[in-house]
Length: 460
Image (cartoon, rainbow, N blue to C red; front, side, top):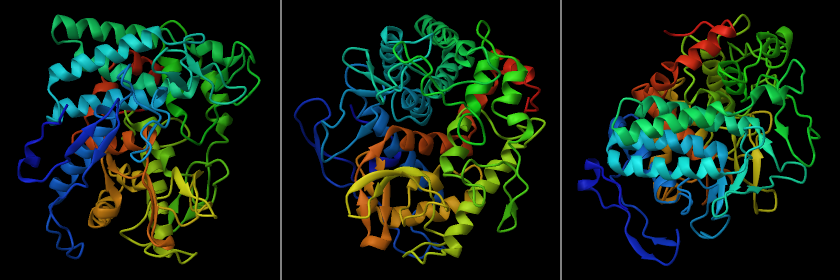
């Protein structure tokens, strides 16, 4: 299917040369308006560039979804399209559900097309393996069975489940007043997330644990403690009508009884939160994104932290680190910045994966880092977006900007995609522009109950 977007009636858009099987596409690089002038006088407007960025990124979740389930693939490699082609990612599917909502609202697809895809995804999730209500990290799109993420990790993944649940709640709110078909899907989405046994994942202790396996029990033994990407799991656990946690679990777990706070400052910006293993500059930037794709950080605070300030300062520190550029990497600066977890260039030139941050900087920039920070750093993120677009011949592929690149190494590019990197781009840009996902999620009664139970202040 092709994406509807009036913006592209004057553009040369992606041409599908052949479709051999599944998502085996061969494509011609896209030609868009040039942006070769200095950043201060672009030949493409900011709004046009945001439109293009969202429309192209949307293709990851529409054109390149897992074919049997309609859910999000863990990864998509245009030069190796059969790589993990049936591996569904749970968290990325939550991101994908929200991306489909954006796609409908932006006119990339019709509402009818979106509803058809929602039905397919929910049917798949209904059949998929669950472990005390939690879905695994990876699911086989053909069989709906768990794909082990590691030797011990072949059961429930509470954090991936939380990321998925954000999408299910947004979907419930989006469809609940629609047609009879849409209302039925809203009920199904609501029932799916309410089946997660959040309290099971406490081990009867005052904290949440990330994994449980029917073979290995809680052998991984990884507590969910901040500050990192897992706040949303505690909010949803408190929001659950049937499997809720107490405020004490939140206080001892996420907040470490107050140990979550930090007095450190960098570039004049207080970190506020104690970023695990990244207490000087803050961690990889996805920590400011994943929990806040639907949970609105504006006005969000507990007795320890104001989360809007935490995230804004986190992004500003990441930006200022690239301006300082202590390792003198090529092109780092006000328009080339953004360190987060993504594909990476290994020392020997091969491709790998790394949680990039100022404390772990290898000269690799991830477009998702700066673009997904638009709500926090709109000016700085727009500067980066124009830089990425000016280098579109290298960076823009069939599903948006490629996952990572390095000007330091002859402009090396990881011509690959990950669901958990593409999702925040389209969603956080939309939240910056309209607040769409934030508004849907924050109007949900159960979410409000959970935030109230944890004594949060939030926009009402």
